[in-house]
Image (cartoon, rainbow, N blue to C red; front, side, top):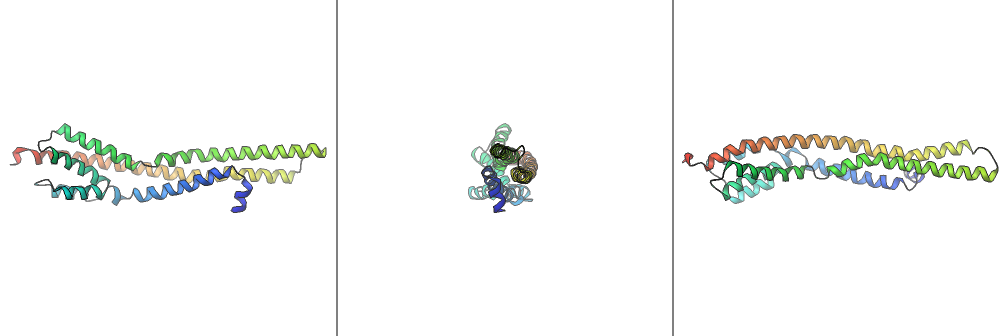
Length: 216
């Protein structure tokens, strides 16, 4: 592998850096987009059960906010109700919408960088190949002119072309997994976003009943 990298020349250095960054981003997103970190299965039902008769204390709400992304969303709604006991539906919905935007931003973190690497890696590989081909034909033309020959050495030319194509191959090796993981993460973010929206829709009428004087 080291000999291939050396043979491919300096244009492969950006691709090596892209591969390292892409691997780090993929690992980070795999850890951050786990279900227990975003939307634990029974969290919404547990919160609705705990808040069936009254709002929980502040320390419980803070623990909920640190539990997961959905926990932070639900905690924001509870904080809004605690700050304004007779909160209006529109105000509560705005609180959930603001928390939802923050949640989606957390879920989408680093995805743009991964998508950029997936798009740029083939172009970097092609650039390396073009540069390599220019150097090959330039050296071949200079050697042919100096020797007074019509054609260069076909074996050397074929070897030079294969070396230049290493850049394209490595660019595709970086781009294909990056694109696959990018699409996978986008699909997971969309699914989680829908779960967060549904959780907020269920919590709005539940919290409004808590603040309604008819409950007393």
